[in-house]
Length: 162
Image (cartoon, rainbow, N blue to C red; front, side, top):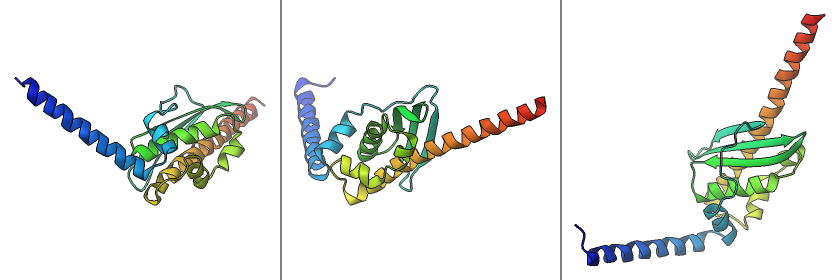
């Protein structure tokens, strides 16, 4: 059985470690990156999305993007990642940015736009922004591919009816 004194000592050690981690994070990342990473509003898998993509970056992190559409406008976007805090921040900020954009507008988002919206990222984490943008673009490309397949199938069925 752990005695109260030993328990209190461990609590102090954990609190000190947490404080040190937070200090190091504040030195590395902007307040916006930390807020987006710690409180991601759009971190979720979407049921029955209109488009989705899963991309694994060179670092080993995987990003998933889910889109709900209203015509050619993005009505909702969510993401999932197994990556680091900057990956979470990039996924969440990107989902925030593309809400209500058209697909064409969303395709034009650059990693630099995402980094700017986050008030910067350390150079060693800039690939997280690239991963998020690449995943968004793949989701949009998947819409185009699915639409083409559906159109081709519809055309084939109409030809069979003639």
